[in-house]
Amino acid sequence: MKTNVLLITVILSAAGLLSGCTMKQPPPGAKAPELVLVERPDTSYYLYTEAQIHRKKGDLEGAIQYLQRAISADEESIFLKRELASVYLDSKDTQNALTMLEKVLGEEPDDVETLMLYGRLNLELKQLDQAKAAFEKVLEGDPKKEAVYTTLGRLYMSSDDLPNAHRIFEKLVDHYPGSFVGYFYLGKIYARQGKDEMARQSFNKTLVLEPRLVEPRFELIDLLKKQRKGEGSDTEIISRILSLYQELLKEHPRNIRAGLQLGLFYDEIGRAGDAQRILSDLGRRSRSEKTVLSAIIRQYFEEKRFDLITVLLKYMLTGAPESSDLLYLSGLTFNELGEKEKAIVQFGKVAEESRFYENAVVNTALILQEQKKIGRAIVYLTEVIGKVPGNPEFRLFLATLFEEQKEYEKAVESLEKGLAIDANNQKIHFRLGVVYDKWGRKEACIAAMKEVIRLNPEHANALNYLGYTYADLGRNLDEAEDLIKRALVHKPNDGYITDSLGWVYYKRGLFEKALKYIKKAVSLVPDDPIILEHLGDVYLELKNREKALEFYQKSFDNQKESKEEIEAKIRELTGDGQQVQ
Image (cartoon, rainbow, N blue to C red; front, side, top):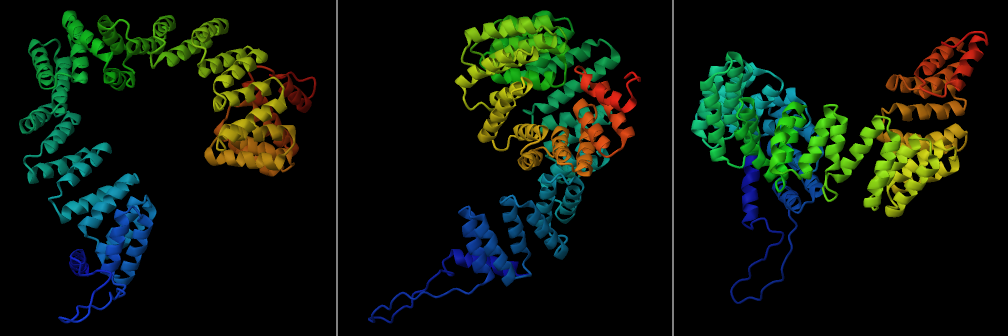
């Protein structure tokens, strides 16, 4: 191994002994000679130095080239190979980094620094078993790698391998008795194993080592709440829970999570006045601190604890009754609970200047649409647009309501007014194309989809829509195939786009090829009546009348309206006298 020589020469280079030019010193009194440039040998230390210069400049490709040449000059250097893997990682070339690290480990399987890199790379690649094995070897080679214990232990916990997680964190506290991280994770392991007393001891040890920590206190509170549920209403346990919350808030008076939990706990134990005091203050804070709302969403909304959110908002809105953030969250909560009219009332209180105003309007319209109150939704949106005429999204949504009512002329009018506000709005152009298609104006549909693609050449839905429209019209089939294949690049497992490609082949008379793609489309979207009908059409062309009838019948069963065309196909196969079921 030549690592030591390389490092020495790098130091010499930094001292100026590997300069790109040398000056021959003249004897005293003699005329100084001209500067003589001496070409340096293609040595590993010179090439390494050049690689570092390029790396510092951000020229990773140049650094890679110099390191590759350095390795050619010194093929035994583990250091150089590891450096090359590191630069590959910097340039996001994970495959070459992985290949180089595996090569190094083939030569030096116990090299700790290489194992560290290899473990981190496998962690990034979600190859968790390889990462675990690498980190285990790191700790075998160097038990003092403190951070590796935490990484490896958490890996085992994430895969619910608690015995190995326990082993790793026990080793961590053995080597580092002052590691509060080790004791904290041991506490979490014991808690998950139901060993509550051992968990409590570990969390308390964590706080002895690092008294200002927040998470161990929350863990201790959770243990006490669990104990209280098991033993009924216990005054002593309640007192200890309140004491922990108060200690936590004394250390961290602005801690939102603690405030929310304490307010809920006060409500739970019947101390409404204390709940009001804590939560109304949080309500007032929510007007200037956006993290209050984020904490509620993260801790309760995402966990679907809408019952708890209603309690929180009941108190918080007394502190900030006009808070648009809280009113919007209240609307969302009522909507999730199925109390739609209450949701609409709360959304209606959200101020126009609020960041949630647009969402509140759209959610209100959606509720009305879901309730089949389309007329009321149209009136509501029209009134909103009268107050806020410059919002193109409102005009887009109004158009979808007109579209649902099959009032295509009004839908187009609304969309065109949206484009007058935002001429490059892709969503509006796309919707315009759909409305024109439903209205039977195919050329206008094609023009709208072309405009979407002009604005965004990777718009998969527009590419597919235009390609399918061409195929359905039986024209521009080469272009149709190209458009749909471009769409599939972006959505390779989309059943509708896959069906479109099959339909192009059907229109070309390539029925076996069509069968391949449309069968795949049915596997991806089993209940779509159009795709099922397409598969029936393909089987009919392939003279398989039994299969054709099977898929026509499935298409008929899944049709919600306009069944006449598919019914006619079934009658043609079964005979006029047989009634379609």
